[in-house]
Length: 321
Length: 290
Image (cartoon, rainbow over all chains, first blue to last red):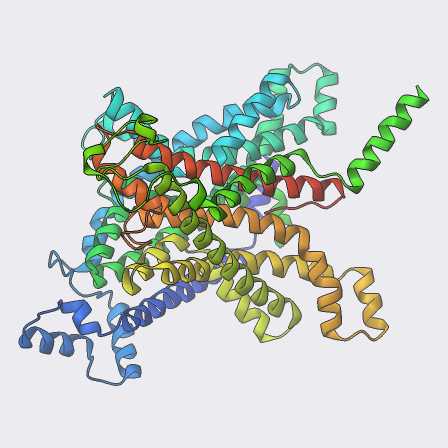
């Protein structure tokens, strides 16, 4: 009850201020990314060759010149480019001919599904394991287990994925390795994605839980006669999750980066696979649209997590007011 | 009882003087093995890493003096692993140094200035941190092409913001310390405070970060090479070895397991070193959050 009343106490202008501030940050980020991509394209040498291919016809070159204005000075080109992006026009994919932005957006659901699956597996593993480890961190079995977790933390995600493919697809033939049409094929990608998020989360949760178990409110609750089980799950773990949510927020940007390699390995038709293919063929309109879309995705996820965070931890709201 | 206490205390003293945490010792020993193998690799290589014998294709481990087997062209995997180790480790080192120098410089400049420079730099760092840097690296390397310097400089120049953020936060708190304020009241110049107080104060945090960042860069390098966007094709870096192994998963699983084990070994030892340094700093009463 108390939390809810505190939450409603935030004046509306403060919420407005937060929203405008984060939207301003998003606009600066998008501006930075697009500017960077503009100059990266110019750095590659002759942009017409990049866009049209080695042996382009004269008409195609003329059309590209008209569309992007490559015969103009750099400042005018830049203005052209920014104006096009403001109209959400990234040009046409060089390999498929579709508009780049719609092409990229059509791949977003698969990536989001993979991120969601990976996150669910991560949470399903790391919360119980972290709580178990944090309850009595000095016991022999848990020391052994935390050693294993430390080792797992060093495993690069794509190496784990390769080893999983080797064992479960090649040797045991339990799973199909490619595509995402059947639910059975979802298992390995989400496990490999979780394998490089979970160890860090487990270590953090166990450290937080073991710290919380020494707090005075736990001692009080124990002296009143609460069982160890309810101490752990009702007092210690919810507090430990606060730090974990912050970590999840910072990890989400890396989830997208890690998803690139997982998607390539498992031929998962998401943004990562598209990024890989367009990087190979230098499909520049698509690359620009991908950078744009990923920036927005990361921003949305981060602001959702920040909102959850300030909802979970009433102390944060008090600090800002 | 008292004797026991005394021995315990002297033990503790010994450890705090010379002593290093156990992780650091193990990590350093295991990692120096990598360095030794790189320096004297020609002595350890049993075959030429680039020339194979087509009669010996896909030989399993230990046959015909091929320590770890051979690949699809009959080249010795052990020799290739050592050859690629040099490339991968030096690429990760250069990328880490680039990120470290750029990031610390930006962080120190931001901490020194109070005005718009700090705001602007912080804004840039925020922006860069919000975007997954591996994706930028993929795009940039795809545009400018493969090779040692393109790859290392790109990896370094996309991953520096994390150094800038930590150096900025740490040196801001160091500037508020009593000894820094005291030396400022005695008239110490800005540069002598920076060199004499701030930089030494940053050392423990930076060494931990360097270790972890090195591990990150090693993984990023092999990931990019694995995607075909990193090392030049002929060089047997660990990522390239993994990439080539994908076609022979069924016939020759060792082609994949061996470079994977190499990456895991290197990353694990470097993580041990980083954890050891952090544990040691914690023993001296400093918390390190990286």
